[in-house]
Image (tube, rainbow, N blue to C red):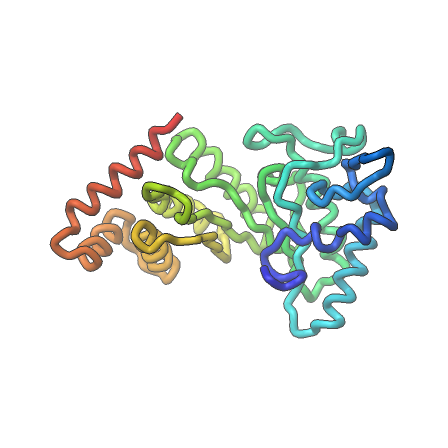
Length: 277
């Protein structure tokens, strides 16, 4: 992600930067006016329906790959926000809602497919995230890597878990390279946030959908989060045991005589998170 077009990254922010805005303000769906002048809004998504954006992104990636021939591909990841174009054409080409947000997947993944066709021997990365969480009604190019990025902590709700599993399955049907992006973050929480039980279930759904990769975004606090990384890594390494078995194994070996009270402590924390409104 530290590379200019590394995997994975919200790289449309880098491709369509302030310099691109100065020459092509029409690339951006939301414009900011200050003191009577158009200003670059670095948070605004590009207008994915603009064919010139396809050309600009393709040229940018071509230059990058020529300069870095060992790279296996590049990222077209959408920016990390919901400021999509609200032009009449863009709104007409958004399709319903996902997680309460207007769904821009069709236009974003048409854009992604169009660029991916230019580089059939390289991977092109894209996020299925917030405004693109729902799958589009068409297959992805074979070289597109899609990172499905939902909040697995919400699997505490049976209805949401069912919806999320269905979406994962739907993405698996249209993409050859489905990646699951998970949030195992711990730092910053004043009590443990043990989401691994929900992440474990979501990973089972992803396996059934033929997902090929898993990315756990984690800024761990060692006292709270060791079991998250261990349980998920153990499962990813092919261990077929159920969550409760792996959880017990971890606590027995990590905490020894304190295993039972420590497990109770983490269960109280999980229940507190899971019961929040």
